[in-house]
Image (tube, rainbow, N blue to C red; front, side, top):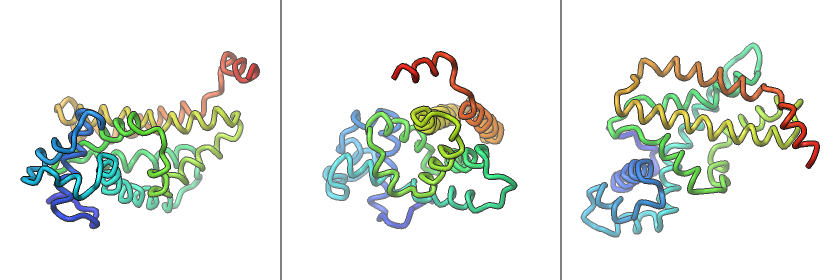
Length: 216
């Protein structure tokens, strides 16, 4: 049974899942609404336009289907008791719900590759931030824990964290589809990704980076 976020009809869900897959595989700008209709097996070739208005409306529907649930998982991780709310705590809260997105689903797994395409398609993340308050809290907490770094470097590192994690896990998603890795590998992939990201966030700016900052 296909997971439904509860706000879409069966017909709309068919379009959303078809769009997610096609956008992930071909890029958002490379997919026409008629192709989504065909992939969703709609006889009405105007179905996607009727339900979502435009390509952007359909993109937002894919995000609304996945992101609120993902953000709830992050909220639950933030609520867990911890000896210290350090960088690892917040990076783990960011990454683990995405790892859960890699568990096999009847409709297939395309969300991480869709997100990677979305980051190329849309420069503004205002819509995503509005519907993911727990994620925004994680970003702010990580930036706060990097207070010893210059503000511009902190902002760059949080942005790079998001893009890097999505890129790494989108690659894993594709490798899972091709059976190059298995679900049994996900625990190690997650632990290694957390180690890598925490180390990168903590690293001191090099002399070259400091010189560039001094010259600004």
